Image 1: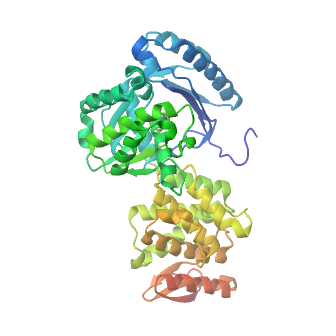
Image 2 (image 1 turned 45 degrees about the vertical axis):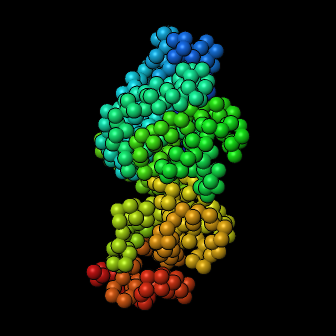
Image 3 (image 1 turned 60 degrees about the vertical axis):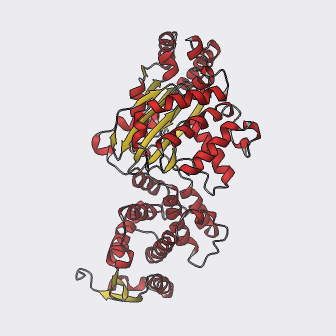
Length: 508
């Protein structure tokens, strides 16, 4: 066996080497599928685009650092037995006079062809990254690199034609001679050229790129936000305007919580803030959403067959974790169907499509904490789910799924005073999480997490009753503990509990 039992058998790992204007990065994924799981991620901040606009060339020290990083990346891919290595390069290599010679040497080191992305292609892949990582996206994608800014419209799976602007952080730093005042003038003169922003009003701006992630991380810590997950982090447009204005006008080192940003990232924060401020001012979006998925994930998404692209990355990832961590993966699937029937039977529990997919994800994840000490299963499950590398889910959704499984373990009378994740959900979502957690508590005490039981014991609302149908062969499974949990669930939805015996094969 070449990998641990905790890995899925998806064929050989797949890698992407991304030679950007600021960083050179290697990401190795467990396999090529709809729910990408990184198993290794490393970057080297080389600054290839540092002087391209002023000198027309890639700086030699940056080139040397990039070559050293690529030699290490190639050796790592060999050690990890990577099957396919996909390599791409962006604005700096595209625009520099010595770019072709640099790319040729990179190809020799990596042992694979490097795709030199046009601005249009870079925008397309960034948009595919949003399609891959955001459920039903609707807005404008902005990918800010060291050399350029790509903008493209995206709605569900439909991607528009992208535009490229020379507003990357390193490019702005170079053009402005490190003057944020001059950089601000450049940005204000350039942003109006992006006609795609005319379609942004009232929609979402999806921010892609390391500088914007660093900016959002600073905002997150300044705000005291309870969930330190970058993907799906939302900044309301008005807050984004106020915060970016402060960042680009203040002394960066004097900003609160600046220590959460690496020293190498700090010099570009002001330029990233300038660009974001002007996009928000010009486009008037409702919110800015940070994406951890971008060009690399978009490239791999584009390689999938059409049928696989249509898959739900959240439910696929939850199903994979169910296989890896649950006592019985089949039981998790049965729990999905069992709660399908329960929720469909109760008009008071009518679900929207998004609520349904979140409930199903929670069912698949309900048993991932079983190896922990019983006193800590709820807490550990909550942390594991809330901080998992899931795509296709926003932060309130993460909180709902995590809380559902938390309640399944700790019960409904638990002290929630230390559970700050509650700040992310509405009262209605919290009520649903309690109901789902209570239903799971019935299911697990009935079945001991083993398959074959729940399909034979349907739970349905009938009039003013919550009825659990039990075949006579399984009546010995019913005890006071089961009845107490059924009573708890019935109380939550305003029904009376009822047990119904039936002869197997005669149920409707």
